[in-house]
Length: 274
Image (cartoon, rainbow, N blue to C red; front, side, top):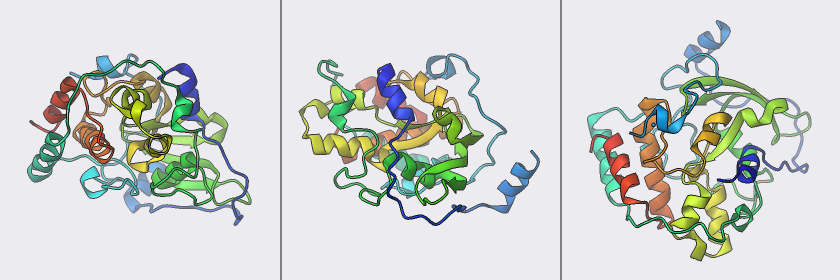
């Protein structure tokens, strides 16, 4: 995506109309994680992260605040847990196999604004819409641990701990450095435009841009490195979630009747052992 898109991608619009209830702490917080916090791209890394060194803290404990995409078909549950069982990976390949393929069309005419402004609260037919909180803050609340809000708001997130699936690290985030955590569109909007969204209604494009199924809060530099790539060109450096990433890419493609390129589908199947 263009630089302007990435800047918007990393900063959401914050409504000022939320009902206040002071400083809150949200989200389940396990004993194991408490202990960690108290103490302290084939598509390979070369294709996905030129630096090979995402800015983050300690490794995230396995299974912390994470949900398998196979158990999260609408994207309302937090995280992107690894799919490691034989049965789960077989289910993942079967789902990916359903995705249609075609060549990637031209980017002519693409503009971020054609998918609505970032981050609108009234996209049609998606979870969290019209709840008085913009999409970016909805996603920070969904995936954040130890979430804290602006005084007088139950929407505007000012700090959190993120178990970042792309880097495999815990990120301690504060709003003062907002771009350190960005919201990734799993299927990038310009990729969607090239694969058929250029012919959609504006409402359907707004849905793709704000659907929690297509959105994951991640390390900001990694989101920038991904840009508008498909899985054949970029994958999360954290190899254990790559099958899950392929599944989520497929889930969004199937929901919106979007094909992917043949090389992308081949990589997606390979991530899950196919």
